[in-house]
Image (tube, rainbow, N blue to C red; front, side):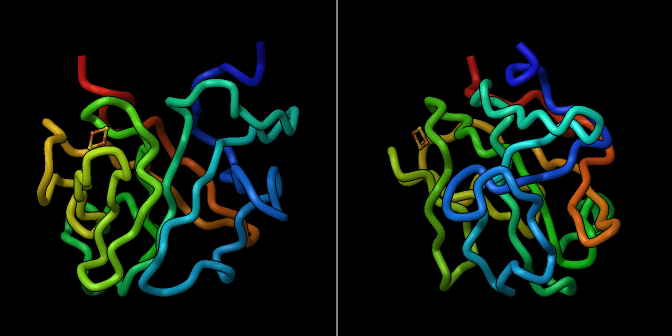
Length: 156
Ligand code: FES
């Protein structure tokens, strides 16, 4: 079904949950320093939200641009960075946030990932970084410019 299609370049990031579910995320609504917003890609031609496949889950967070590593900054839009939301350990959604270190935290076994540095594993059991999603900001929307830099989903 169209809801299960993989994320593609050109997709618009929309809220996956909450009052604004299925509406495009406005860059101005992201709080500097997190926490992350959980998003799905929306096909810009059909407006179908691709929430049917968990591997389409995306984390969006706004950080101080100077904190980003050069490689991470290349795929960011200013300080806004996006990553796969699926933990590389056993596939939980990485929904928690550690404000003191600005890390994504997986609620299942406390895997920590660094969004300023390629999603690298800071601590916990995940075997690999969560892949970054290259994005741009256009017309006050956040748009994927390519697929994730590596395959999303739990490591098998
Ligand atoms: Fe995320 Fe285990 S599933 S740390």
